[in-house]
Length: 538
Image (cartoon, rainbow, N blue to C red; front, side, top):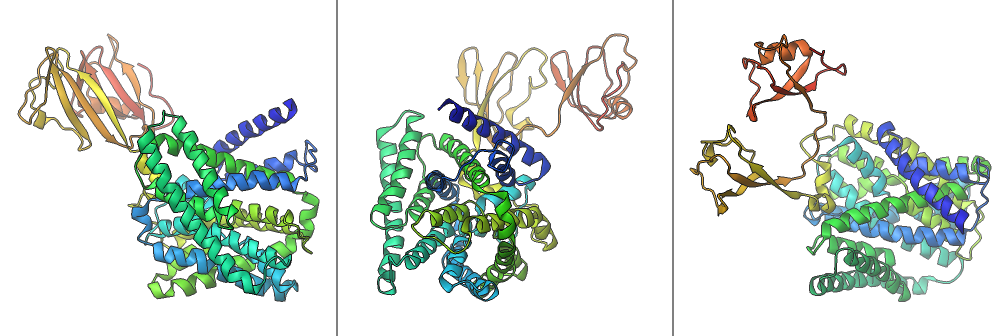
């Protein structure tokens, strides 16, 4: 037990470090997790022999539950409803057409059976939102024509459809379902998913507001609800993944206590889930078998990326008069990821022995997608002129909106403070800063525009917004006696030292650093550097 726990802890810690490295290097983090798994694998450095696909299926399926839930939870309905029709068509009919076109190409080019060809198309028909948005977030790329919202909703909602088609393909291959029962099965899948997702969302919101769980316990309650929202539909042949996605959307777009903490928690859980899925993918893989799997995987990847996905997108978005550039970007942004891996593992444990090496072929396709599409997505978006610098890509997520913080500050007004004698309305404050009240001689005063600030006043104010740290470091230099800069101007100091001066504090009084301001002994000069080299010492 101890060695297993040590291994798990080591993998988690190392994965977190690799994620940080990914942000700086630009290498997709999921690719690094795969590499980490391969290093630990049988043909890697640590020679761990792991072929328990049944255990891997349970772990990965559970991880996908929370990925699907958080995908829905983070979808901002205000933005999603603008593209809901296009996204719904792409995530349903688009998934089917993609799988069908892949099946046709694979059948004729690789001479596989129709059912096995369609099985591969179904497994690889869903797209991975996490991979796309990790790129967009990291590079802060806002996309024109509501493209980011379209990709988010489509990617988040097409996994249930891909799962359903994969399961139907397996049931056909094993003889468990026939054409006569197919329609009723589809109705149960979709109806069960929608019904239970809606019911669990309503009950969870109701109980959260009525029972007032302690902070932390509410997170556990929602976690239990997520698991139940997946498991209960499955008992009635409903689509559990669709259920948790609907549950996530409805819950994420409603208000309840401690919602911000919940967003942070599931952000971490989802990240951990992705780490484990891709680590297990690397651990389960056998690099020597990838050689045989590479050529069929390359054929499938080319069909999928340059034929099946573009044909589906262009044909289905044609009625919406969407620009060619948007269609091309949506087509190219169809990265394959965690869901495809989970469905491939599910295929292996589903009492069916495929003629093809499903796992390693899907492994190669996902690998090619991350290497080729992920690395060039930003470049393609720029080349298609689909970048809008005025758009904040983060605004399409509810978790981002929930992190809009209201911060409170207390400012004492000491002797010689430059606000003394000024009226409230004359203070040059940003619009997101609000003076709440002023304490004067233990009396709390609600200030008005002509209210005059006095010495020893205590000002309470709030700042609304997602306030971030400066992208540069502010340094302070105390001007000593006998400094050659005493009597010189701010402009002369800044030009000689190659710095931008932000503030001068003189005898507890803050001064604006005007170019003509003359420096005096013991002035506190706040600055940041124009260059990497620090300013010369006096």
